[in-house]
Image 1 (tube, helix red, strand yellow):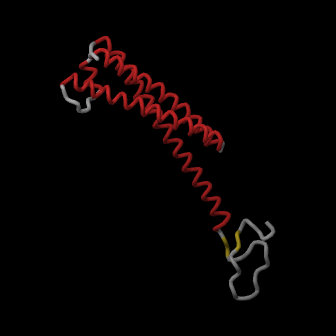
Image 2 (cartoon, helix red, strand yellow; image 1 turned 60 degrees about the vertical axis):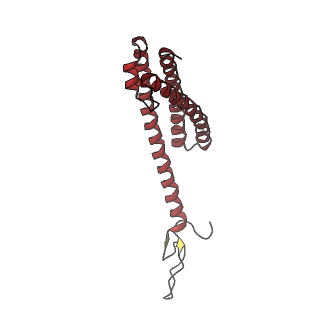
Image 3 (cartoon, helix red, strand yellow; image 1 turned 180 degrees about the vertical axis):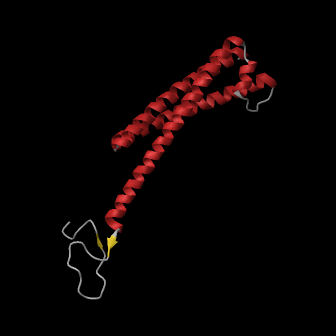
Length: 169
C-alpha cells in the first residue's frame, strides 16, 4: 500500500468508527430512557445491542491501530505509535481535510458517548441506592415499641418489630 491509500483507508475506518459510536450513543440514550422508566426489558435490549457494537468497534479499532503502525513505518521507518497530528502533517493535501473532519467528528461523538455513559452510570447508582434504601426501610428499621401492639407492661424490652409491616401483613 502506498501513502495515499493508507491515509484514505484510515479515513474510511475513522468514518466507520464515527458511525458505530453514533449507534452506541443511540443505544445509550435508549438505555437512559429505560433506566428512567424502570423498563428492565428495555435496559436488557439496549445493553445487548451495546455489547454487539463494542465488538464491532473493537475490530475497527484493531484495524486502525494496524494502519497507524503501517503509517508510522512509512513516515520514519519506526513502528512506534504516532499521533493524528503527525499523520495530518505528513499526508498529502487532498486527504488531510477529510481526515481532520472525520477525526474531529470522532472526538465529538466519543465525548457524547462518554457523557451519556456517565449519566447512565449515575442513574444506575441512584436506582441501586433507592432499592437499598427501600430494603433497609422494610427489613432493617425497627423500633423498641411496636406500632400495632399495646406497650408492654413489663420492664423487659419489647421485641423489635418493623415499623412498616405488621404481623398480619
